[in-house]
Length: 128
Image (cartoon, rainbow, N blue to C red):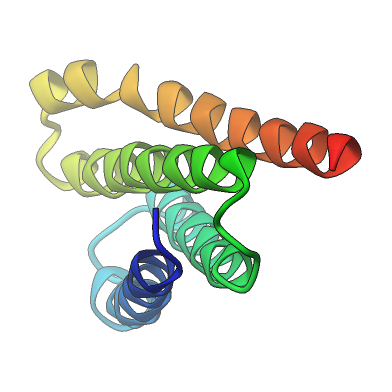
């Protein structure tokens, strides 16, 4: 993955995290329960952190295989983790048990991919 691609993903994640954070704070605060809003905010926070991590990775020479693998794990993990949390939080407004049943297992898969990304980054730096 090229540094420019990592920068684009990082900026997209950070920018949309700010938008979604404002959306949650101003529009959803009256519509969601405190627990659902807190979950929504977790999705925003993880999206922002991993957007910043991608921007950091874009500063590293991408000739290192572990950087590309880490970036891919961060991108896919963030998409699965954060989007599933957003959908799960919003589904509480409509008591959508079908969406909850589908998205419920997606969140930990995304979280696992994020953890694997960080472990891959650690191992890569230790070996370099």
